[in-house]
Length: 159
Image (cartoon, rainbow, N blue to C red; front, side, top):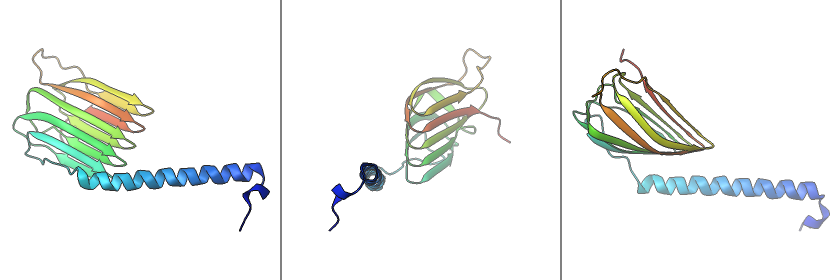
């Protein structure tokens, strides 16, 4: 049996840090796998409300909802691409976004107004939607967080 006291202090510290890091990532991946089974995604291209969950994988939906009311999106070590350019927005629509070591990208048509209350901790939030000219433009409210991940909302014409 090896006596750890015989190793130099730097080697003992490095070994401890590597074991901690290995344990942390093993625990994170194991919990993500359990959460993936516990919280499945709900909603499709025709749904007026969605509950999208991307854990250890990706979700991509191009919505054609007749009256999109909102919902929630959560990514953990995964990604969500949600395209609303062909959807019609219902009054009072709101999306709750959460990103933990993952990413969420939302595309909206240029005529929509996006009001964001999303916060970031060691991550990023980018809202790149020009302010519409019309006072009564459809409004989408965003709330949520991004921790060590990213959330991007952009307006782009459909090609």
